[in-house]
Length: 115
Image (cartoon, rainbow, N blue to C red; front, side):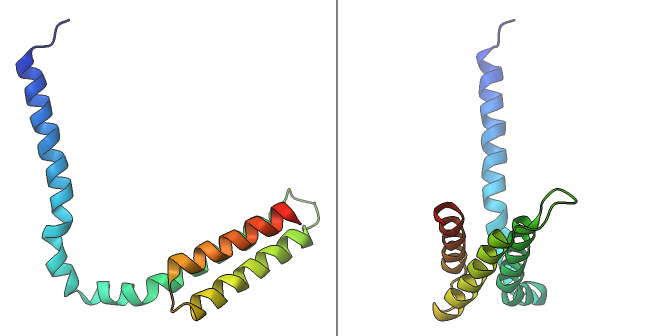
């Protein structure tokens, strides 16, 4: 089967139009979103929500073992310590979410792998 040059050009144009549209759409929706009460509320609550979900997942993952096995207290204590580091860094560093997540994650990785 041979593919014609016209077919290739048409595919490239359609792909380019879809890519451009997908990249331009967020900017077109930006103005109405800035005025949205929902978006303003999400901006206030999302960082705390993200940190809460990450902390819960980390704590549950550190305690998750096969049914009937005892909880690994050492790993659970490392997870609790890393969660505390995350909270302290978040509050001390001016509520910089990425920095606090990175610090807590690094703390947990170091504790689990080096101790």
